[in-house]
Length: 283
Image (tube, rainbow, N blue to C red):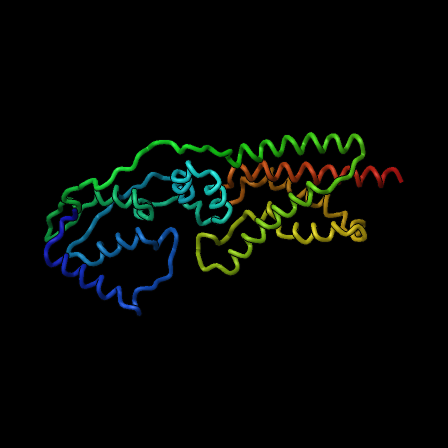
């Protein structure tokens, strides 16, 4: 319960009635800076008499790290969100910005002070717990992205070694990897170009999930094009190696599973580069 005067309550009510009008009810949603939680903070801050002071320091972690904490029980959702969010998610959130999460809204409101006529008092008068959720673990556990892609990397590495030793050429695995990475890259690129959400801008996942992989996959399916575009395999190998070596310089953090996917695709591209080089050398 907030420590508000009768005049403050009336002012809040009048604002909410006005804000609910059809011409006022819509706004440009911002996942981090202007969402359903920050709107509560801003309404209280702007519509009550006096000055509200929120805590000056936050936990010193990024928006992405805040989200990761809430997605521990949903590893695949966390993976998908990490792929969609761009570098804006890697900015450190201030205490004021942390209130984009309802838990932090409650936490920082509980520490906030309101100044009226030179007197400072807690903004929250008292608290009541209306519902407390069970912390029981989910009944069904699924393999995490890291576990799945670690297994995939090991299997494909063993298959690639065997294919290289026996001179076998099979591209089914490559079609799947090229399609997966190309699709991820195309989706990230589409969000950057067409979405108006700032959180998905400057998404450096396109550095490893190259959208052009989709076009290369389609072209490689046709045998008559393979000789003309075989240069793509060594180019892709070099590009992925650069990402693994210099990716830490990019102002964005990547999900751990990303590096496993990159290593898997690198394994295949190196295999085909060696096969092409061996064939050329044999001539």
